[in-house]
Length: 308
Image 1 (cartoon, one colour):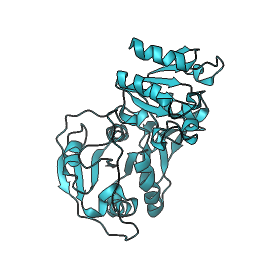
Image 2 (tube, one colour):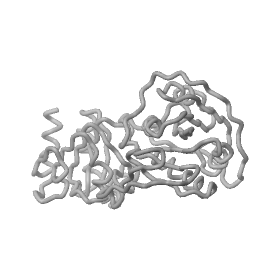
Image 3 (cartoon, helix red, strand yellow):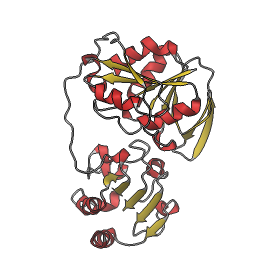
Image 4 (cartoon, rainbow, N blue to C red):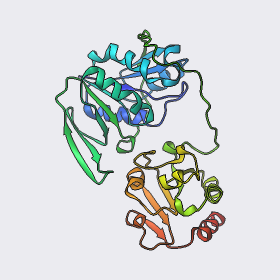
């Protein structure tokens, strides 16, 4: 039995979720091989080789895989898929882009967003926005699986796997990567942050998020938001935490002006410590919070920032 893990990376560093996916692969058992596909991504391959438990790293370095375009990446994975019993990727936007394509090409049923491994063919995944857990067993010869990173600890460094060059696969000609513009911030990336300060519809406007940003800067935290805040245009889409946003599990999650809709709770309820600030004493967010404050956020948050 051999497991192939598709690494998410930026060319230099592995993205959050890849090491957690390796942990899931270790629970399945067998040899773990990591595929690093991209353009000018040798550094990412070296980083993957240092993950404990990885037996080999495949490096496919070609302009065909610049930007992580799903079409050519899927074609590459398909060329080696028969060698593996399981193919895993993080259940991020990256993994969700190409893994369904791969399962269709292999004519197997994808198992999405697993949070636990029972055995090599049986897995646990959340359903109904995390309100129930389904145990799923697969008889497919090749199991295509996306992994919820918050369900598994990150694998540690300490490995010394060999890096093997993998020849580029076919060019499907279906898509071309022309470039990208990346937003830069001094704050940590949302899915990797130890502390997150999130705002909801109760913030009232995008300008009012400056209150949260001041607190976040004091704490060295990332800033997130509920879907209601994003849909209202207060902040960009990449701030969104929730079932249709980013799934996070920081050490500390501070929810400000967030009522606690099921969709939002599904994305953050695995946080180690949850603090909620809301002037509505009946807000559902209080049901999952470890600490809560019934107070006007425009009074409480500045006071908290000052105390910090």
